[in-house]
Length: 409
Length: 87
Image (cartoon, rainbow over all chains, first blue to last red):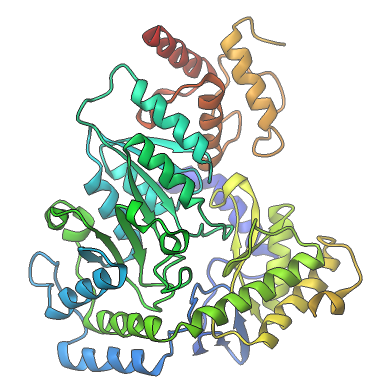
């Protein structure tokens, strides 16, 4: 069965030859949002998406433990069977209220939220317009729908507009069909933001619908942490907000929110919602508490921004090629997969974990060292990453030599 | 060698312009060139290539029709049938 992956097996074996398998790292014990033990050595984590550092928040942990004791370890069923408890409905109301939407529904993972949302929203006569750098879950959700899928150039509202016009002009166009544009708040590989104001303008002009996946921007962007739509001031233009509980909220799960009076229909049309077990009570309780924390402590967002700017600025001064703008995701472009893998091994050997991102998982077939900071990182942890990257970057001739200390200031 | 077919020549020149960035193809691109196997495109790069073809020919290639496209010749035939429909 698996012969078809012969080329992949060879590439993977080559990657693992240098040291361990970068895609099978395992930690023995988590010490905090930013540190883990692997055997008897400590690893500092710079690739966790744990943006607000809430995984060890005392209140969230207590809420999870209490809920497990009170309601059991799992629901053992689907939301449309025995798997809806009062706390699921309460979390949905809380998410809707937080986002200022009429309704929200909760999925078991963020991946399933995209699968369930896109396949249920877009039908046979509809069109999905997906940003070229969209997450795999968006593309998989689109495949699961019967809609026609059109890809537009990454972060290019003009190209989106042109393609919408081409769709409108096509001779076999179904009269009843609708167009749904899908973009992300922060793109996961390069950490760049969508030009949402311009995309919203295209949406208004063409009469399309707009869904924004705020997976990496919820709790990160906007004065109240609602995401890019809040920051860009276009929440009214966004018909559907989608996101995950597994990043800034430190747990797992996904959601979809919107204002459509018939929103509830999605509960009986979305297969990824119906045909899976619902979130365990402990998870629902910690997510709910984390949302409270997110609202009560805006200082977490400023700490996160400070760390992001510190890291982006220092790496940029060192001469690394980075993503287009500072955000909690700071990706460093590597010249090729072999250098990327050697660099990753160097960092891991020095006790620093980042994400290694290789084609085909990356836009433009680039090789990336993807780092992400959290509100919980200290300035000296960030500086340690910068120093390690400077030393390894010079060894591997990714950046020119000299000026290390100065650049890390 | 270049193709006599202007559509295939435009596709070939697009493919060559992407060469080095995402493709590692040396040699002639003809109607028989296999888009995935010969141009050595991974899943994302082949979608990027199709998007570039869409831009070049100012058209859209539905994702469900991509299952029928194996060679550059298949792609040219699809583009030709689209422009016939639009005319």
